[in-house]
Structure formats: C-alpha cells, structure tokens
Length: 190
Length: 227
Image 1 (cartoon, rainbow over the protein chains, first blue to last red):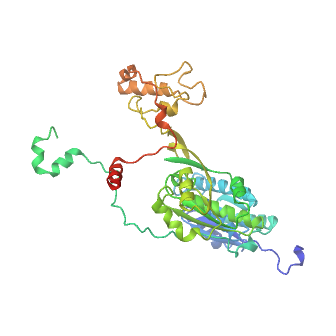
Image 2: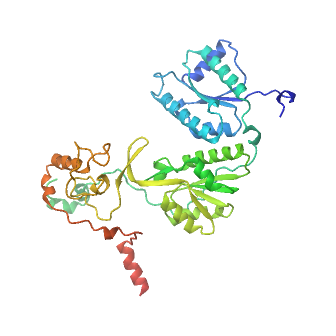
Image 3: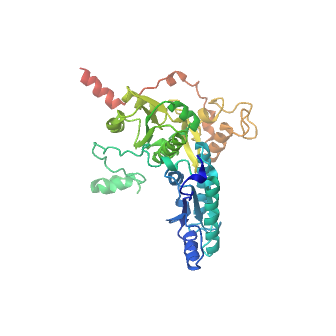
C-alpha cells in the first residue's frame, strides 16, 4: 500500500500503564509544569507496576495498540518494595512472547519514572510515541474488531457444595477428650 | 502435585494447523499451581494463538474455558454445552486430564498443550523438583523421608554405590547423592540403626502399568450389587 497517498497520516496509539505512587504522580507533575507531550499516550493507572500481567500487555496489542509501556518507580524505590522488579520480569517475558508471535518486541518497554520526574515522564511519552511511529502501525489494528474467540463462562456446578474443609487446623486428641466430660478422668497425662 | 510445562508455541501451532474453531480447555488444579495450564496460562496461550493467527492471516476462532479439574468426570461435564461447537479441543491439563477429556468427548479430537514432567514439589517461586515416582511401595519410613527410588540414579535401596563423590552422584555431578542425604538425615534423627536392616529386593511387579486402584469400601459395595 502506498502510505503517503492515504488520507489520514498514521497516528500511533500508545498505552502507558503507570503505577499510582511514582509514574502517575510524575504524569500529574508534568501536567502541573505545563509540559507538552505526545497526545498519543493513553495513561492507565494501576496500583503498582508489579500488578501488570503479561496477559494485560498482550491484550493491549491484540486490541490494536501500536506501543505499550509500563512505568513504575525507580529501582529500589518501589512503594511495595519489589513491584517494579516484578514488572521488569513480566515485561521481559511479554517481549519474548511478542517475538514468538511475530510482533516487534520493541513495541513494549518498561521505564522507571520517579514521582519527582515530571520532565522525564514527558520525555518517555515522546520517546515511545516516536518509536511507534518508526515501527509503523500494529498489524493487528485492522483485525481488532474481528471475532477470533474469547473466554467462555463455565457452567455452574450442579453438585451441592462440599462441607468446608478445616485445612490447616490442628486437631489434638486431648481436645477431643476435653469435649467429652466423662472421658477426661482416665486420660493419660494432659 | 503433577508438574508440567507448556509445549513450544511452534509445536502447538503445528498441531492446530488447518483447524478453524478451537477450544482451549484449562485445568485449575495441579497445572494451575505449576503455572503451566491454569486459567491465566490459558488466557495467555489463547491471546498468543489469536494474535499469531491474525498476523499470519488465518481465519480462526479460539475460545477459552478453565474447569476445576480434568481428571474428574463431574467437572468434564461442564464442557458438554460447548464441546459440539468446536473442531478441536486443546487441553492444558496433564497427560491424564487430556486422556480423560478425550474419553469423555470421544467424537472430538483432543490435543495436549503441555508436556507432563513428574510428581513433585515447589522448591521456590517457579522452581519444581521431582520427589516421588509412584512405585506403589513406599520406603520413606526406612530412609528418613528421602526417596532413594526417585533421588538415586540407580534406585538403590541398601546404601550408596561406589560412585558417591563428596555427597554428589557419579551419574550427574550436579545432583546430590540420595544415600548421603539419607545418612545425614538419619544421623540427625539418631536413627542410624535403621540402616542395619537389609531391604529385600524391590518388587517391581506391583508397578505394572496401567495402575488401577479401587477403594476397599467401593469393592465391597460392588460385590454386593453384583449379587
């Protein structure tokens, strides 16, 4: 297809999963500082970057995002101690999955953005938008509306629920005996 | 717990070649715990296959469902409503689950998405090791709770072979010598005298495949019904 002849130029859609405590606060700060950054970025607030899941990242691409990034706290500064470290692992794994599928892994990234770094937030947003522009549109964009399946609801269990198991509860023989008043007198040594 | 690992995506793709309507059936018990075939892994695999299919221009529908267990008929029945709509069912259960699913829906092609590895334990996050080989005659009482059938490369029951090398196995220098572990454990427990008892040769005939077991209580009920 001849790109320049199309009526609409390609405008990338970028999804940014931002953690509440650092990256999202940095986004707020960028706003307060009146910094201008690419309007292509859609910010999704998550409680902690450690909450991000490979499935969520893939779903963004499946639904037509051209680039996705996860922004968390600076290394060593996570509000939940190691959420950002988990996010780094998850992103690395999801990149591997993307490569396996045949989508450029560069479309996905993790950025540590401290709460005080408003300008850095704007810089990363622009960086990722530029990267998406270079890579071109996500080939899955055109097919996002096509039905390719989804999750089915399992049928409700027709069997009555089992009595609740008392797993993890220690049952002492001595306690059993204590419950039967007549039996305690001839118990050995309790 | 049964430990399994997902087959490579290319292998799964090759199995699914030519099918248009695919149901991925997850199992919510062992393979969910070992992060191979539970609800989340099914979601991930379905998303991967959907995206790969679209990128390659294939027209196919991949739906997903996860049931509590695939080794119990009661749970397999939950798929009855949907099974008819699909060309093929891709099961992310262990080998037993795949077979039982294929038996329950015997007019459907059922494919395995996992390679089943062993009966094992979780040593740490994302790390599992084999601990039992289901030999049908447990000797753990004699060996301080360490299984020589699983841990010893030669399945020795009466002490180590000559190949024990500073606590490591001669077969694989990375693996611990089961009998060194057993000796140290029994010493710690003050039960070294247990080792003086000679174990009779292992009766491998009880391990005959395929294993079958009926609970005593049910054996009796069946007999009575038969009369």
